[in-house]
Length: 190
Length: 131
Image: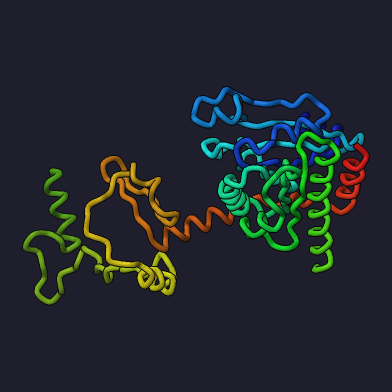
């Protein structure tokens, strides 16, 4: 009861999940936009992928954006390595939508992105957007990603730089507009 | 009167005593008549068309091998399930396993919070724009 009252006093919280292949830039994206120091669970890499980066997320990243006095947006980042995929459903519970982050400079990760997207589509019936990180120097184009991932026309594919705040904002806005479109479509249908 | 004499008198009164059957009266059957054996109607665990499709889709009949160890389960297709206890584990694949898997998926699907409405979305959009 006390917890419920405390929640009511704190207002409403909304959750967005950021997922994608290993080293796509998920932790960086959340760090760029979060107003708090991101809670990360990064540990040293011990396998052959160590050549790409020294540490990786093993459980989750957690960031927060305060929208107003009664509304908070939480950002959860998933681990990229599939051996930690048991965390995906835990983090996805109650989410508003999700961002699939793909490194445009590494086309070889598209297959991994496809498998993650398939898992999320099975797990959750919520809107999502695909964000193309490092799209400036990337070799992956929007159409190529659409074709590889089998995306419908209404799914936004947004070029972005995970280190740039405005770019990350545009990704989040694309997702929020997708959710809004879905809500309005449902209202029109009802 | 002794107890044995009293019992014999009671049995005689009920006509149950040994050698006390009266000639014109049929013997009472103390065992109630047994009903017909109850056999429940056949209820398939899966819809017949799905099973027929599954059989038709199978490339070749599986060899009649004994149970596969449960350790082989991860490499099995999505429609397979490991069943059985210690030493009897086997991987089965079929309509039931598929139906169960589909059922679990349908139940476990994460849906959007129904409390998220248009007004909340507009507040979120305004808030993120203003960052």
